[in-house]
Length: 412
Image (cartoon, rainbow, N blue to C red; front, side, top):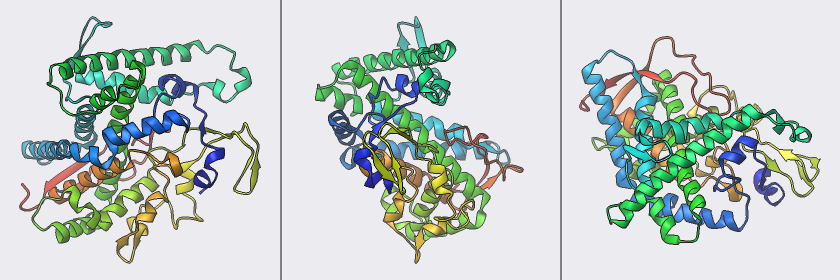
């Protein structure tokens, strides 16, 4: 509640050194301070990518993503019915494809990068603009904890961050230049890049950063939540059966689609309980208190840094009964999902800085979970029941999810 009630006092971001460099000093919707620039780019991202009108344009692409994943799983099961499957590998590839199409207008298979003197593959593109960036963001710079020593060089850290940022920007510019040529020839499809260029109000560097933000956020956090949800459903067969029965009651023999989601309360409960138990972001970026205020009964002086510990909030025994248990039923009220519960986990933030991509993340994750459970029975690989370790600060399962898949009758 403090994020909403005290918004005006704690709305300024105080970014760690790595994130400050990688976000080009707040040239992103998620990291910029609340003000005119934030209002403008938030409006752009809603109109060009994440708002209901833009999402309708990309619906066919999302459906294709679902079909591709199910087709891949069916092929793998047909080839070897008894082998465990790496869920992350399949889901990551399709999410990245979706992010590229939405951001750039094309599922890019390779791009020529002049500075590298060669073409780079899609796998290399992913490594440079997504994977390397995620690992760099969580690099710890001791100067963030001792601001009065910030004048002391930390050369290995500074060099690593600068190199990662430079490679990201170089590849993004190559991707954007390639798409500009397609746009000029009339070959490009609807995309966020196309929308931003048509607005004609942003510098090239700003366009580069906003398109990159759309790609990395689309390719990452949805994967974290969906993988944890499928882990819990595979680990808890009775809850998986309950979800399957709900899908059967609502959809019958029809394939589940995004249109069915509002009528699947247990599915929504599974999604939000996963956000609570396995927060994709355990600590929100630090905020800077720019006027003296009161938080939780304590007087907080102007100039103080405030970090919201999402994990601690979601594991608080005063708020949640047996919080260490994964129990979707806690989000149901007489069998119905209460929309107001969406913000209890603060997984998408709160107040005016609530995550712009929450609707897309919910639609993709819930539709994927529903399709997966409708088509297959999911069982964990032996010995994986207690593999709940995470990668620091990122929420990722340390060990990728391996599952046995058994096609449900009539769905082969």
